[in-house]
Image 1: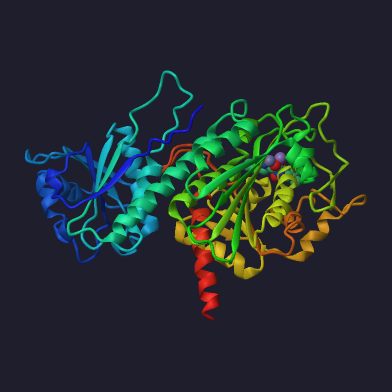
Image 2: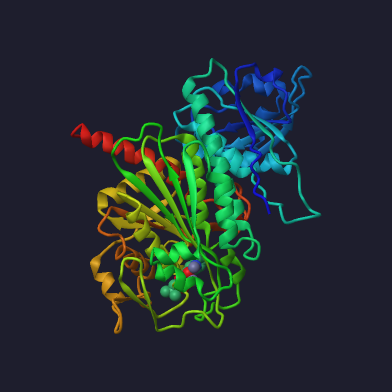
Length: 516
Ligand code: BES
Ligand code: MN
Ligand code: ZN
């Protein structure tokens, strides 16, 4: 099944609103402040006139309060207007309208456009709401909200996709707004691609298909893709990955994506490593049947890395980036690894596999070793790694852990500026004791307590002492229910923050050389 790469057209316009021809206009509206009892404030008067006073009437009746995600749809009565429908979307307290809120409100608008078959949408921001980053966030929100995955439906294919998003500006367009719009479009498109990859079923999306998709989606003027097959994986000595893969007739692949800036200078090399388990049955330590279907999304971290590399190729940060996706299927056949088996890792460590369902850390460990061989100076891995992180943090934030603290902080800030939630877990050495093995150098599980942390401590043993951070997205990689800003299904988590990271690392390097 193909991924959808015909992106929504995003443009900035300064034409007066009435002359823009679209299916729907959306505008954020705010909770009334104490000193602003009527809707005539804040420059919405011309819009209110165009809708025959419906806006002020809805305000007065209490139907429209401005609470976040609230929707009020009304017709344009002014016959001179080309666009005939206006959607007002609640955006909360005016003073707190920042990129995060703008993205959330915009996602509601994007969802509404999709539901109401509006394939051309205009956004107009009321005066005073154009803070830096808002334009980018609005574009991201609209395109993420309008996402719908109907590729596997032959009958109910829903309404037409959003084809065009027009950003209407009152004054001249600043170059930053134009750039923000482009950035937002790239990041949203790549996040939506990651969602599509993660939604694909295990029978159609195998490690080999994953690799083909990387070649197709990532290869570009500044990016190359290399795929390691079984033989190449063997010669790298990646015994942990081969161990995971040996219970499946589908051969494993390691996808290596490289981004080189225009003038590569010596400096940091960032490695992004994503778990690519295309289906996780648990292997011989098999999972219960309930909700096992969701384990088709156990490659969400790999999808995030693939799609972040596509975004990075377009956004062109000034440092080198390597993306690595170890891809395998975790199945329980007669060749599968058994609990108690000992495997040899690419870095020579011997691992006792006490639970074959703790497979993600095995293939990521070998991928971290490979990243070091390829010249990484800083590493981040991203994985649907543990059920334990869902117990610890639920579904609203990803777990972040690593070392040293400065590098973890850089990752946290990158997530923050990308508008993705992450929360720190403690990388205390004491947890590593839980991974002691009777037989080998270490075991692949650490008992009941602190499962998200012991999984991370396992990975740390393969980080070679480099700055390394780990993102556990088991709770955030998909939405269990639909909400006012997203449908149920894969979330595309990680793409935006990983694409931001090389910019953050480059800034930091520049600050260091200046002695800051
Ligand atoms: N892919 C799972 C983790 C997972 C669970 C992701 C729920 C998304 C939602 C991982 O491979 C796994 O099975 N982990 C085990 C580890 C345990 C055996 C130590 C787990 O969390 O139960
Ligand atoms: Mn597992
Ligand atoms: Zn898994």
